[in-house]
Length: 111
Image (cartoon, rainbow, N blue to C red; front, side, top):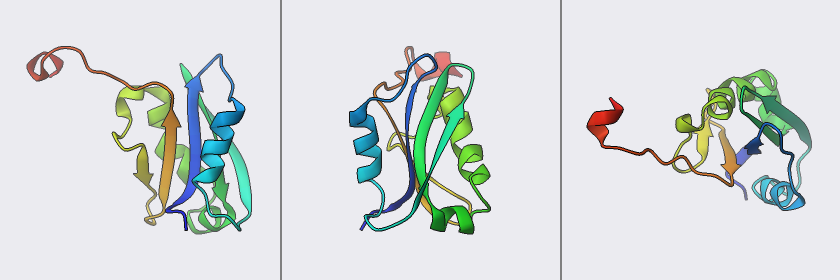
């Protein structure tokens, strides 16, 4: 059984998803459930994904998912090292990306 109730893939704003991204996202979700597609567009990136109808009902619609992932899509430095996030009700959300943010410089320089 999947641990995730929503999953998305983040891409640069001018890009779209590849079939392999859709397959990865769908593989993270429960097998026998109804899904609703969603998309998030911010200043430099977009994310496309699916959420179970269960999480949409329990978390007051897609707005909770968009509010949670919007800052990550807007600024990749906000990404979790494990690509997982939790909604207010505790349901897990995954957002993947082909790119990883690497902070350059010492910790002192970044403060």
